Amino acid sequence: MSALPKHAAAVRTPAVDEAVQAPHAAQRARARTSAATDARHAALVLLGTGVVGGTLLRLLATPAAAGLHLVGIANSRVQHANPRGLVPLQAARLLEGASAVRDDDALVAALAASGAAQRIVVDATAADAVAARHADWLARGLHVVSANKAMLGGTYAAFRDLRRAGATGNAVYGDAATVGAGLPVLSTLRRLRDCGDRLVALEGVFSGTLSWLFNHYDGSRPFSHLVREARTLGYSEPDPRIDLAGTDVARKLLILARSAGHAIDADEVSIESLVPEALRGVDVATFLTRLGEFDATLEARRAAAAAKGCVLRYLARIDDDGAARVGLAEVEPTHPAARLAGTDNLFALTTTRYRAQPLVISGPGAGPEVTAQALLGDLLAIRGRVAHA
Image 1 (tube, rainbow, N blue to C red):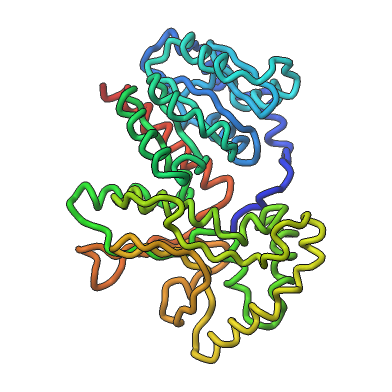
Image 2 (cartoon, rainbow, N blue to C red):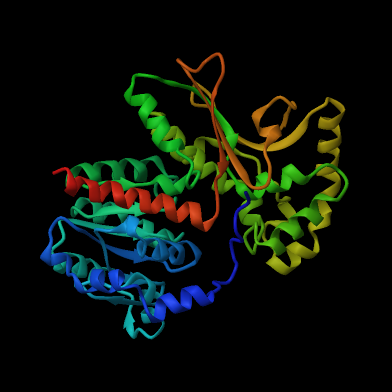
């Protein structure tokens, strides 16, 4: 299964349009039922209405999301809020005609006015400015559910501040969508640690884009052709350098390492960028025109690996001593990464109890459906705090 295009335009189907115009009676009832009338419910505001945010809205309209009240929605410019609740399938359309300028404080006020026992900010953006507010929201007792890696995968001080803020406000930080999307890698790491197990080494393929590129790179076509194809298919960012630079992979490695107990800072990760120095500062159009300039270098590395019976994979790794690296590596055919397909991610965990053979988690690690489902999973876990109180 491959990820959906990162920059694909939102497409409405007749079924979705019909649902927006004439929502199911149960959805209407949920919209009319104010969270204030039932403190057992959880109220949420959604920041970001792109592909992931839009997919989450559809999930919020399903029976699985019962008890979750959407009271606010915002993009980078405008917002719409109603403490009594919004119909998820109508929310994006309401936002299109909204005139209220984006104001996070007003959205938080809508959460407070909802009367819900659990109040949640959902960050479906990639904006550093939004992530910078996470700690403040946590300290004020608001739960945060995020697909945004900027703070968790930034400096260690920022990571530590998030943890302290959550403890201060007795608030949950839902981060399942930041690494591996729907794959249960963070939850598995934490469960192992809670059971007294210890991570010895972590290795894997954490980028759907780079996974696809090197799963297809066999020498039959230049690497630059594959990059252009990945961009056309929507598997890469519009500027492929965002993927090829390795910084996103490094952020994910930091999140995993810190969840395993390593106090590692961002500047301690060695990152091999696949973007030549001469092409890092040019505009996107120039970069795409000059892509072929690094074909020869990559082909030499691929051929050298093939001569040893190996293939190239873009791997992230952290060892027991905390040494962390992301970059190209030669792997043998028996290595789990050599058997990946499409845009699959892979996480191989070697621990004191999984030492003879690593615990491997593999599957779709990107795409709006699995990412939105990871967000919903964290929302339901927070709602469950009410049900079991």
